[in-house]
Image 1 (cartoon, rainbow, N blue to C red):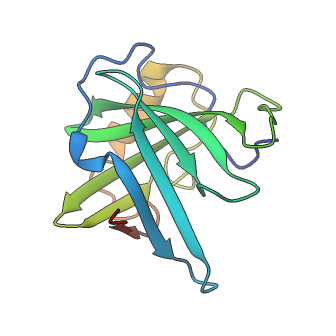
Image 2 (cartoon, one colour):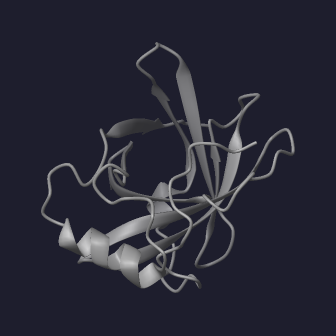
Length: 152
């Protein structure tokens, strides 16, 4: 079962931007509890990714992801579709959005802050407007998660 996803509407209904091959691969970080978490990003098509987090864990979740642009920012739109145990979303809160950057072997991810951009947006346009209205708010995104690329 998926819980904790934030939004009921996507920013884009059809993926239109090409993927960034720099994020493809297996990434890992040590979380605040000292546990290693892995993030797997695979190309699903020329415009979409398949994401697994925490990859390899008994509670791993899977998402379809694509890049989108709003308020002058390129974001990753995640649509959580299920778990490694076959759990499916219980409601329509399946979308999350993230800013990211890649430098050398580090992927930095910051999730859109649902305390700033409220989760009750009734349409893609309303969600985009809420992000735009807060684009200069330093709290627009949550705390950064930094992942290091796993070498094969």
